[in-house]
Image (tube, rainbow, N blue to C red; front, side, top):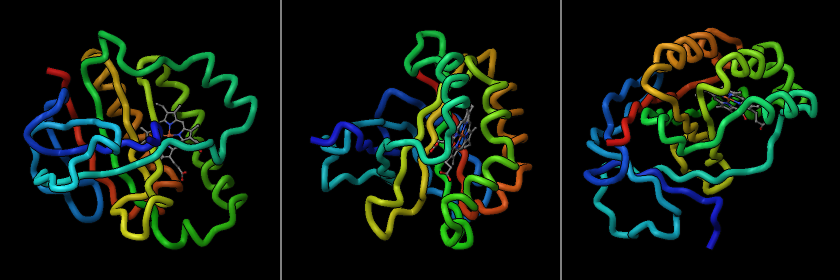
Length: 184
Ligand code: HEM
C-alpha cells in the first residue's frame, strides 16, 4: 500500500462539507455535497461519486535550503482542532510550463516570490501539496493543493490567493478550481 497516494472523492459523504466551488480558469468540476479524503487503496473501483481526484505527495522540486529552514520553522501541521476550514485547489499548468527546463521553472517560481508570499501567511495556513502528473497520462490536474485554516483566517487566505494569482507563475495555470470546505 502506498501511503503517499490519496484520493479526494467529491460525493455525498466524508468529513468535509463543500461550502463553495469557484472555477477560476478552465473546465469546472461536477457538483458534490461533501469531500472524503482517503488513502487511494481504500477507493472503491465502482464508485459513483461525481468526481475523484488522485494525487501523491513527493519530494520537493524548487525549495532551497534557506527557504526550507524558514518554512519548517513557521509552518503548522494539518488537523489542528481550530482549523475547521479547508480548501482543495486542483491546478493544471500549460504545455509551455512543462516544456521549460527545471531551472527555467525555478526562475519563474522565484520571480513570482511564491515562497516569500506564502511565508507571510504561515502559521495561519497549513498546506500539503500532492502531485498528479506522474500517476497517469490522463489525470485532469497536475497538482492538488490542500490548505487548512481557522474561520478567522479566511480573509487572509483569500488575500494569499489574490497575491499568488497575480504572479507570473499563474500565467501558466490553465485550469484551477477553488473548492472551499468546512469540517462539520
Ligand atoms: C509549490 C510554499 C500557498 C500552489 C510550493 C512550494 C513551496 C510552496 C515551498 C515548492 C515545493 C517544491 O519545492 O516542490 C507555499 C507556502 C504557502 C503556499 C508557504 C502558504 C500557505 C499556496 C497557495 C497555492 C499554492 C495558496 C494555490 C493553490 C502551489 C502549487 C505548487 C506549489 C500549484 C506546485 C508548483 C509546481 O511544482 O509547479 N508552494 N505555498 N501554494 N504551491 Fe505553494
